[in-house]
Length: 312
Length: 268
Image (cartoon, rainbow over all chains, first blue to last red; front, side):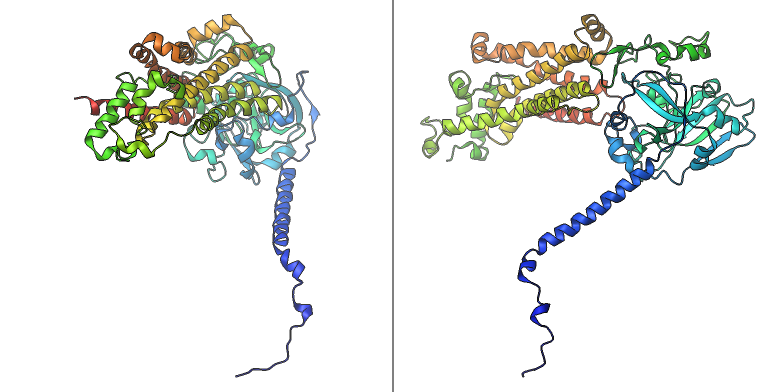
């Protein structure tokens, strides 16, 4: 049987053969656009993460700061992997908003702070500090932040506050390094109260004038310039004032190698390598490591009478 | 083709011959090493006979079926050899390229030293893997690559040490002595290097003849000490993530375990 009807498609409706033959290019092009879109979205996210900060100039070394690219691509942040390049690669997943920090323990006014309120409420200053890693390398880093003592004062510590315990966020879905126990998670650190309220002890929220990149411990981290870098805990969610010396991540992992104090000390070697010298990133020759990383003038008094070989 | 190595396992007698040949080749005790002279075609008179016995390519009357089978051409042999050589040299070339283009990362000296060390260890393990591979795959001629790979391993380890002394310590020999005495990981690494030296020196055919095969083999058993020292050296320097050195340790355990298993199996 023959079905007749008026053709409703004209030659105009037929895809031009030239176009038809180029169809794969269009698909590729669309995919490219999509990718570009994602790329822009990613950049947008990064840009939102790296907002400029308003700050004054604070206590700083006059040494030349390490290039930003080195500071943001050579990190020990085991929550994102154990290789130095891993954090820069993997920390983008971390959501740093919303973010709160619980400050509690031996105090009269425990409080949960929102990170943005914290940044607004505190007078930010830039402090260019040396950072000496326990592995034997060092950098000079222009942090932006505020003294930890201001935050501690805000919760009115009681006389039982002898130590301060810090905790990093525990979120294995974003901190993929937490999915296996290379360290005991969450990462924990601690300071004696007099170390914590020392004017050099900083809560950093920025780097090179902008908010902290995730791989450097966003949205807020500790900076204790006279101690080995691992004491300066990153991405903090909890700060507790406590009566007893708190457990700390690397000390739990290898108590012989990483003490609670971990002050930079060229006279006390790591059991497996010398701490007498260090390689400043960007320099060829090793340089001598300074006692208390060169901050002895301001902090040596904290340890008067202590045997620093035993209290390493 | 009845006496091809590929079919040797079908006959206990022939398997026996394979094993006997292999044992002879190894100086009676699996004494091959990463740096051992490996009977390249030019070394036939020295080490080749035993290998040939397993090859099924010998014109020996005992193996009449071998007539149709020819040795691979010299040209093809050279090509394979060149491929092995280039593969061994590639990581070094890549490192050199990265060094010259400033692509060794934020801490280039650390990257250089680590990479040279890791590649040295990898090649040592590859060297140890050749005999098992040759036996299991029934490709006895693989053994001729042991010397090349072993010497490359030695080259990487030497550059590793040289970059540590020259670039990291800047020829501070006082510090070097202190490091060797005080740091177990450096003590072990240094011991491994020192033990590698005689193996590298005696890697030539001339030395095999001069020493006699048995003595030469005994000397080259040192490799069974050297590679574990290398793995321990790596393990001890790691801060927390011990997985990579443990992977190397596991591979080493398999390679040494295979030898032990085989030695016990073939003893009466």
